[in-house]
Amino acid sequence: MRRALIALTLLTAACATEPGPGTPRTVGTVDLARYAGTWFEVARFPTSFQDSARVRCEQVTATYTARADGDITVVNRCRNALEGSAERVAEGVARSAAPGNDRLRVSFFWPFYGDYWVIGLDPDYRWAVVGAPGRDYLWFLSRTPQMTPADFDAAVAIARREGFDTGRLRRTTQVPGGA
Image 1 (cartoon, one colour):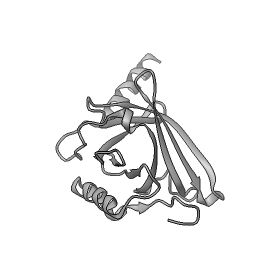
Image 2: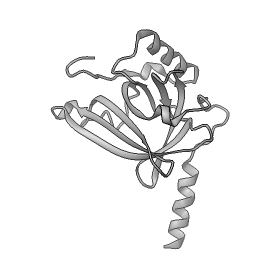
Image 3: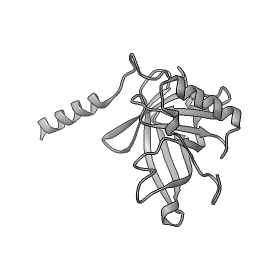
């Protein structure tokens, strides 16, 4: 049992991605108090947990709440368009993986963590671009259900600059029956 626990610990540590040559640049510093609150997903790369034969997430939000232990509670919500708009909720925890809080590790199922890197952030915290170092995940988040065209274009430019294939982006429906 002890060997299995040590092996699991080493495997989990090996899954953490450190920045290096070829990884996306992050914003440097994120004020987690300002980042807290509810964000609307405006666009994303399709993912197995949001887009599959059983689920098509629409009206997606993410709510971040600071915890006393310094971690962050994450609550993701969406309406599954393939199940009559049934609500889906996932609750997890995020913790900082870097001094500037711009690289987080998020877990919805312990002991597995995913990378959550803030690669773009409006100075007024109106919108954010979040990705993963392998460039397989990308989300555009906004404090409102829609981004202005200029803000969306700025987010696309950031993602493209950091090597993400922006042709994979799909807009998220935020209004029932609309865009």
